[in-house]
Length: 254
Image 1: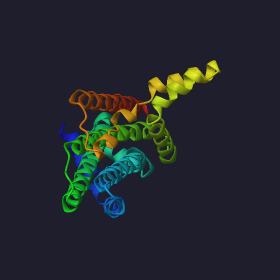
Image 2: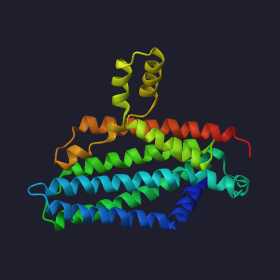
Image 3: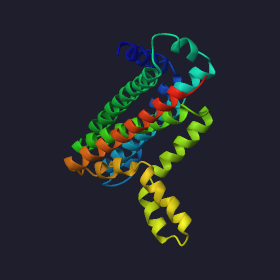
Image 4: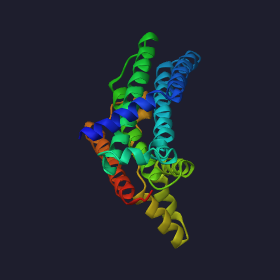
């Protein structure tokens, strides 16, 4: 357990020094500020636009961090050859993978908390109502980000940075289109296409299940049962990917 925390702590410290984090948070702040400006140009829709763009900014920045920092967690250590020094210590490969994930997870949580705090401050300054649905949306954004992190880490255990980023982005896009895949498969005249799309539907994560930003922007609360089910689904899928990442990394030769 101590070795796990050491890896997580080192990952947190290394990542927090990366200037890209500050640039992304600044980008999110600018988007939230732009939402206020756009809201003033729309009669009667200011609150919804501020909520919609604010949540979108938090989601976008969190996912970018998850993908483009996540893919480098393992591959950077391999490319720099520091992996040999790390694994020469009393640290197992499973502890190394999980520690890396925990460190970046903490970074994501800190960044999401900061952005959400700024977002709530913006809502308060503009005189709009802070709905409970916003907290629900951000909680599921965080779950989705942890799932995307697990995707990036999984692919990085057996491929290059570029290939990992491509596969993670592809799976992220497909994950938001899974409901459409089943409909397309049912309408397809080719059995091969139908089989392939159906397989994608069942294998790929349904990320739209974690997307309640539309309801939250309008102040509509999500039922507790749905929130709990969506959270459990996202964390379970992330757990499966982490398990796969650990198994692959254990058997990898350097």
